[in-house]
Length: 270
Image (cartoon, rainbow, N blue to C red; front, top):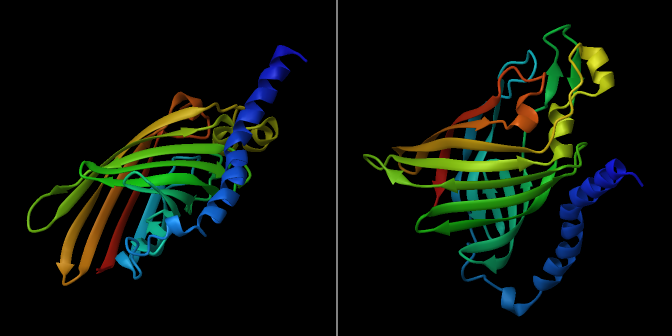
């Protein structure tokens, strides 16, 4: 076996590790949940606690000639027993871990990742992501820390590692702002599927072929919470993600950053 083939085989095995880990851990978690020591009925809410409403979401991936994608969708940030919904994430809490739980998590991404060529108008449909994995949500006196490792069960079969921190600052009249700092790492197969261009796609779109590599992408944002009346709240959110060199140099990108915003109105269950 040549050195090049050995490296390729090694990368493929490493890309499969999160999936193998999930397959090994999930049965153990299922068995563990039947144990009496996992009974946390006194600490987990037996009713909905948090915000439920609707929002107008807009994302600009700066891919090809497509502009922002906008949609009206449900909005949720709440807990119910072991279920947690956190805007774009659905989580199932398992065993206690620090100030939170070890969780089985799924990420909801409504973006289609279509590439419409600015050269000849031809379109490539990359398809939707299906990230599922393990994570934890740690709510502490210093803020909220979130760490999640996903495997994309969509076409990329890649991995996504996310870390986010949310602080809390009360401004005036119960108006609060939650600053966000984070970083994500996209594996080479994940990045290459969504931002790379194969030789066949190059012929179709007129772009040069491009092989994306593992990319580390910093991000920053904020959530502004404004009381409206009684238990109704208006939420304004904005986030910018700066793409690393692994994908930022892709010819399909018109800019090396991506933006997400939404405006939501929600009722708070207490």
